[in-house]
Length: 266
Length: 287
Image 1 (tube, rainbow over the protein chains, first blue to last red):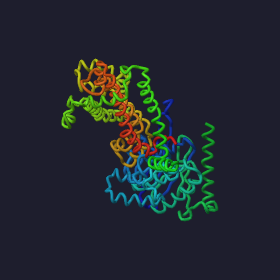
Image 2: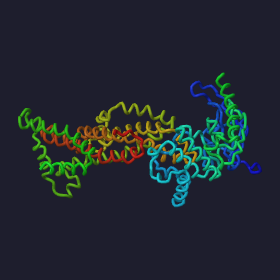
Image 3: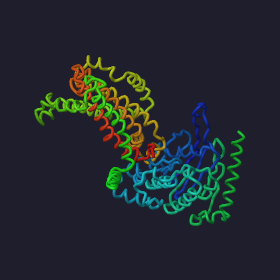
Image 4: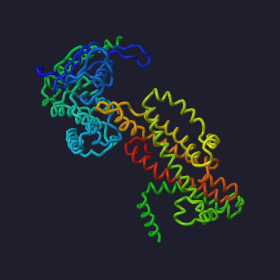
């Protein structure tokens, strides 16, 4: 895998931002280096305020950065672009578009002909299990379906890297488990390169090939935990008996808790 | 007999729908009461006809005012012989003209100011200044500038429509969740895509409220403007008829004004609301 060139490269990324109220400079990220290879799902966990969302916003191009470099497929990131698809935590699909029109939105922006667009849209509607809901508006969908729609929208644009910002944090526990299993299936089917931000250690260990643990603010890359479980074996019925999963989860949890206690002491 | 009435009632309910029928009946009651009192006044002669004319006289005023009409061509050409249709059409024409010019301009500037802090700092104070002056306060000045006629009435209406539309659209854009804009940008969308696909539909609840308000206030301003600065239209008709003590024509004018406005709201603005914000689930719907 490492013989290939990485899809996403971050080198020496350090970031400060002014606090919204006090105006003081906040040191959010310190010397972040990471590489994402094709087909890899990498999760990022860390205590609240460790800068993981800041990192995602920088990679999405929504937040300008000055120190260090970040590039996708060799192109340095300057602003948002269709080579990086983002799945947001909130319900980000547009309420005034139907499910099908939301999913085809990226292709519509790129002026892909309608016939081809419709074919692709149907493919991803089927993939995320929204068949039959094509003409519904988002307010007619459940929270979990909205997030599936968002995942389909991002996949349909076929980005080089998919950035997911705590996408399942706002849904109920039952739905979250289903969505995690579905994302695993989708990652297997599409072979997408995914960076997955979460604060759930279980989720990180369940989904990721590699899990990056961030330190308390300023966010540094503290530890990388490899989780070598084939995707076909990942499902919640047998994961809790899987020794590799349990070891990885406990390792990540211990590492994060250390940081949380540091963050609390400050 | 009772079953026949029952069947008829069920048939009517099926035809209109129970809820809608309820709404129509409840909404008509105040009008029915008003009309009854009006008619009772004529029967019992509480107030003389010079204050409150009989319903029949108001009805007949329509035909009286239209009496000299020289046929279809004169009617369409807004000939002064076809008095009532000329007044009605010239008022409606001005409203349409003002709406075509004022609404899009107000929406466009409102969206731009909602997007740009700098631009809104530049235009907002002027807007507050302009909004503090009621539309009709401009009438004397407008008469000096444009004379009596359609330019003056258009100016008064635009003054009302534009600023209301401007403020509502601006607030609408500011209330749109940032994540919608971000998701269009991350899919490779341009500023223009964001305006078309996010700001405009996202601000729709506010824009429709703005349309309702500006058409309501604009219509009122028009009537006032026509009274003083107009040479035709329903406001002008009411004013001149009152001066000649033709009280039934005043009543007729007032009734026409409200009917036209109610029709605009019901057949243009309400369907627009239903087709957009209600379908998108952006409004709270009473159950």
